Length: 373
Image 1 (cartoon, one colour):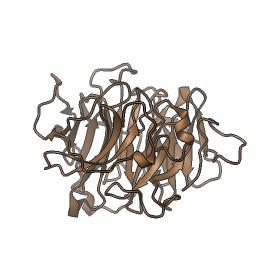
Image 2: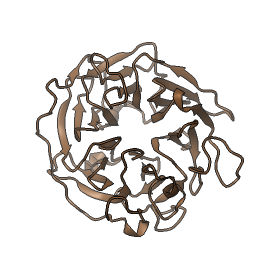
Image 3: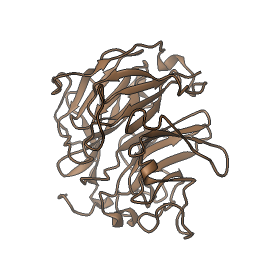
Image 4: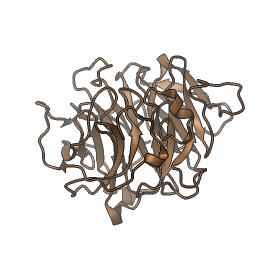
């Protein structure tokens, strides 16, 4: 498949192409990331699957500083965290309770440029048995998904053929409550792809852990779960297994959508709420200057959404017909890329001030921790 070609499902290869990778190559940064604080923590295996407590946003703690465009975040069963650095193509491990990050993997095929590079991470729900980590990244001609053990010398591509672009590469990975791998892809700046059911761009995909189209998808044999997306970078589920997708708008509205199989979310025909019954309306919309949202996570009955251009953390109460979001951390830390709930219930938030669009501050980029109370 050549760069710029239309990505068709029939052309999607899920072969076992091997990529060069290493676990011991030095960081290119002259000032490596460093720990700022250590915190009490416990392994994921010793806490409930849905940690109780509400993150206290008045008690920020910097866990790590000096990162270069952190993007993906996932937690291992022992409570340690994996963080991807977009432009370097490396994965760092942050020890349980904090400490200096260590580079433990590099995907050499990852190519940075524009919004591309090493993006989302996910840890297998059966990690104790299979030890698989998943990564979404931009290669020379396309975006790919690979899985690997941290001891492997090379990752294995399990899904490719996702058109790459200088913008709108999507990139978020998350395992759902059903054990399937969900993928947010972007439209690669070609909105027509979003409305093409035979194209994997501008979609949310639902895959088996091996990268195949999951059984029970709306169209048998197709990986597409929902369509009509512009650039999904946030995926989350509440306790009732309701799925939420976070959508970058163009010039007018950003969105929070309840994601249902087979639904069409309208891009590029509509942005934000509309009156066309063909398209599902968002439950929340923001002006793009106030949000440009990326990662999302749910703790209790609250959806947390990291905002890039809006430079704030949006909190969205769930459960009502018309949720009323409120902003926190407005302007305090600059652009916010990713948010996640740690095994101990704390909320982790990653900045993105070194991505070429921010105003880096001393110590950027950083990971903030807000303890559960």
